Length: 140
Image 1 (cartoon, rainbow, N blue to C red):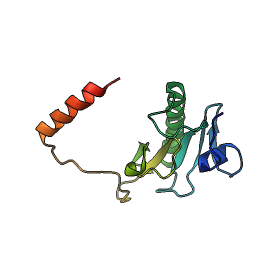
Image 2: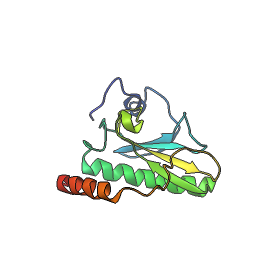
Image 3: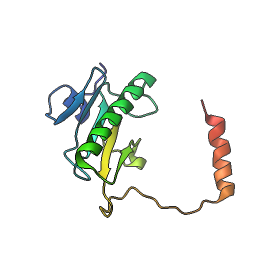
Image 4: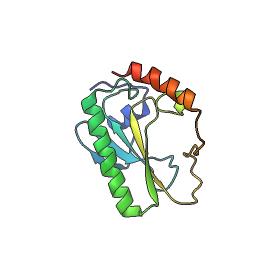
């Protein structure tokens, strides 16, 4: 299993750092986030050390999103929040502080002031079209 000794999530997988384990299988691990944004904030990670969504094998990505769904379902049932966000960030510009593929399972409550919403400002349609053309051309 590829790991990185300086990665906090790899150290959790190796059992060197304790966690509040919610779920584990051969590919993934889910546990409570000790720096929670809201009560019930959990993480679902791949056990293998993959830095981001761009390099993770499809099979591992598929398994971790299923684990995130499983945890989100449990959080939704147990806590009855007003909503649940699944957040996956890549790189420092996306405020990813741990370079190891993971999903945040974030229960949300009306009025909780959790800052994930960037609003609904209409976009410049010529810019949207230009970005669409570039992105469509880069689709694999």
